[in-house]
Length: 298
Image (tube, rainbow, N blue to C red; front, side, top):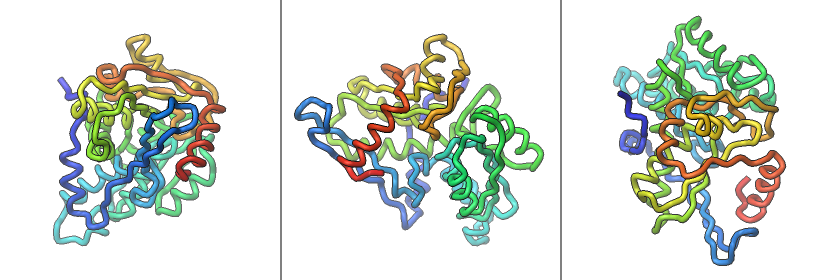
């Protein structure tokens, strides 16, 4: 048996307590947001400043790597703790930033596999953080297959935020990192919200957040998981009661454009989510502009 639900940030909080630069990410409150009923309050967890990455997944892989560094030789300076160690991951965006940042902080090497649809500017950003970037495949799934092969060839540790039979523990640890932002949100909101919207790629972040919210607030909030129309992997898997590869066109929501769900996330969200919905590329682009105008969050 495996503990499918990751609903505690205790280990993350313990580690972050030793980081003098750590600060909780702010919760932005917006009253009377356009399109919502009068009097509705919209709360947005703003992760753009976390670790200077501009990524809502900053705490995932970096937390796992920091744990490895904490277990390494205490007489070695932090920035050299993991010299000689290699972390390999596939990424559609956010996860790769966290792997690169964590490896860079502690002296390890990050090898990141991106699909051919990922913008070159993003690859350049990862390389500026000291990561080695490998371009492979037309989608995230192909990149993941190649990352598995590379990890074996390079004698590196495969650090994925997705999971499948036989590969659970590393993804579970990444989800622990994600649980921190949900735990902070619980502290920042005085009363349980009516509705919670969670974006999903493979689903790890959505699952961790949903589990923390259920533990804190019970069944009161309506938890809705949102995916791109081009990659409804969780929705279709829930409908068919099995892991489904949801093939489709390339989405402009590149960092959520994942066609196959994480097994851990799928099982967890089957318990905790009330609904799964998709949005079109046009809807997403319009909402990004509206949110920027109303909140200043880019």
